[in-house]
Structure formats: structure tokens, C-alpha cells
Amino acid sequence: MTINLAGGAEWAVEARGLVKQFGDNRAVDGVDLKVRAGSIYGVLGPNGAGKTTTIRMLATLLRPDAGEAKIFGWDVAQKPQIVRQLIGVTGQYASVDESLSATENLIIFSRLLGLGRAEARKKASDLLEEFGLTEAAKRPLKNFSGGMRRRLDLAASLISQPPLIFLDEPTTGLDPRTRSQMWETIRRLVNSGSTVLLTTQYLDEADQLADRIAVIDRGRVVAEGTGDELKASVGNSSLHLRVSDPAQTAAAREAVERVLQARSSVTAEAGRITAPMAEAGQVTDLLIALRSAGVELVEISVQKPTLDEVFLTITGKPEGMEASHA
Image (cartoon, rainbow, N blue to C red; front, side, top):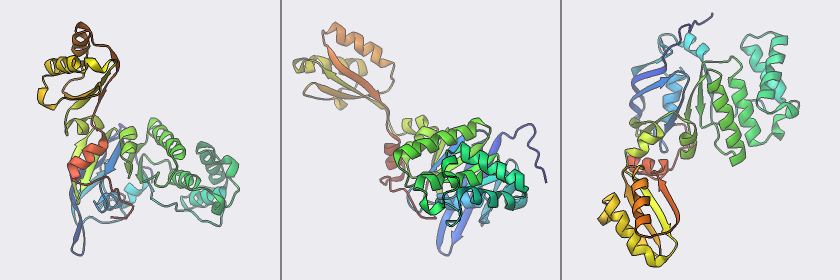
């Protein structure tokens, strides 16, 4: 069956009031999500927040107890067979056979999806090249590194070239270099027309990749927006400067307090000054004031709140991101 997305659906995912309960545990408690087609959408949350359970409902792997969800306009409960043709799912652990080579694994997956022998072999070859695994194509998976396994798992989920890809913590346990390579692969997928919804235990990963981010806590979406919007929601940016002569600290502080109108919250010590800044445009006025006062600077910077600070403020927890299946 061919699913026609002609005209392009605006929303890849629309979820309203999703609920899932396991015994006395209400793992998902009324989640609302809207993911625009052609974007990367990040889902953050502490351990047991309900991220993976939400993904499993959207991917038709769990039936919601209440609420509704649509994938490109198709209801996940009423039309699961159609939805499954529109999605690819990559979990936290590689769903591949240890005893087979990378090529053999991809050929098997391709054949299970209905591809002929020749087509399956070509698809396997193309995916191995795309994910930088050609040299290891014939190597048994038991000799693969964690990063190679993760890339192969992602490759397997793309055999059917789905328009929507769910990535559940795709870079967990990878070294920084391999994580960076995976980020580039994810960006290429979106540039080629796919939509990606990913959960992650790395705050910087969501910050780097996601067009929009939802923070889930205790089964509910407690914040949603772009990274910059979420950062702005927890406070102003901060100004940091260092004067070349510590004796000019007092003069520099006076200029900062006057221009930024932040007398009570300016800190100054040994030539270093920190102050809250509502608008980055104030830097120009401050530089003029400092020059007029004869103050020379060694460095100056304006820093936005980090996503770590957003997460801590919103959830009231440090970034103890989950590795569970909640």
C-alpha cells in the first residue's frame, strides 16, 4: 500500500492528552505535542518522566489509555498499519544480530520489509556507505564498537526511508567524536526531507540539534519552545567582563551599574565584573561608557542561560536523565 503525502502535511506529529498508566503509576499524564514536518524535535526529561512511553505510543507500540495522536494526519490507534509505514524507530540498544555481519543484518531487515534480493543487497551497500561502515561490512557485529553498532541500528531503521524517524537516546554511551558524527547524520536526514523526533539524555544534544524542545516531567509537558525561548524563560543573559587594570574595577562597576541599571545585582572582584543583562544591545552603550571613563578591557562576553539551568529550574532536579524505559 502506498501512502500519499502529496501536498505535504504541516504536522508530522499531533498528540493531545496522551495518557498511559501501568498499575498505580501514571507514566504519561496528558501529554500534548505538535511536531512540524521537516524539523528536529527534542524531548527532554528526568529519569522516569515518561519520554520513552510517549514515543512508544506515538510509534504504535503501546496503545494510549486516553487521548489521541496522529502521524501525518493518521490516527495511531485507528490506523496503526498505515502509521507504521510512515515511521522508523531506533531504540536505545542496537536491534541487530550479533552473529551476523553488518551486510547480512541489513539484507535480512530489507527482505523482511519486502525488498527483493538484488534490491536488498543494494540497499544494504548504500546504507553502509552512508553511515561510514563500508570497511566493516563483512565484520561480525561482536567486533563492532558501540558507535558502529548505533550507526548500524539507525541504518536499519532507514531501510524503508520513512518520513518520520523516532530516535530514542540515539547517542547514549557514545564517545564525543562518534556523537558528533551521529549529529551530522541526523541533520542530513532532515535536510533530505525526513522529520526527526528524538529523546536524549544530553542537554547539549537537544540544544545543538532540535528546532523545538519539550521538557517532560512526571508524565506532563512542563515547558516547550525553541532552545532560546526556554533559556529566556528562566532569566536574563549575564554580562562578564575583565578590566586590564584591577585599579579600574570601581570605575568599570559604576559604568555597568549606570548603563544596565542593575546596581544591586552587580558583582565585582579583582578586575572581574558580572551583571544581569536584559538586552544584548546594551553592550554597545556600555562599551561607549567604559571608553569615556578610560577603562580598558581584557575581555567581555554575554552569556545566555544554559539548557542545564533551564532543566534544573523547570523540573527542580539536576540533569539526571534517564536510561530506563519509562
